[in-house]
Length: 114
Length: 112
Image (cartoon, rainbow over all chains, first blue to last red; front, side, top):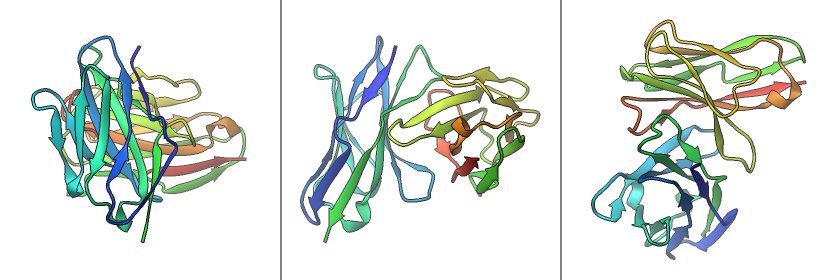
């Protein structure tokens, strides 16, 4: 079975500091990995995805994520956080052979203080 | 291009009442999905559809039914609402099954 873990319920950082949101996954095959962001009272917005190729994936709003197969991780990073990055972040995984099911982590609330 | 839209945005039901949530997408996507979001649990797949006229069960299908009579619409029905169905419901669509899913704004449902 596929699953995703986001070990931190909350991440608090100061504006201008680096931001990291952690994600680890468990699948039996090769994964497709996604990050989504949800602002209050809004739907989920796609940030970036890893399908194959370069382990460093760049996405929207200055975010990037690194796929690490040996550690089964896909951490989301931003070099310099903004107050407007405060939101709920979800990591999700799909196994290529099980292509209809997207498994989401529980989410990490990011708060960036001015 | 409106993307994925959902109606209604909010609804309050009494236990035992029924309702239908409507999802519409204008991106010509084949795949459509219904999720529910509960605090601390992420999103869980209720039902999905791989094309017009087809539906299938996801992780948590009990108490829900769906229909996809037109490619652009995906309806989620609750025949007899229960308090355990209080949640935020999201619809999503994708061009192919492995592609990025695009989400609607959500419907907040409260069952009293």
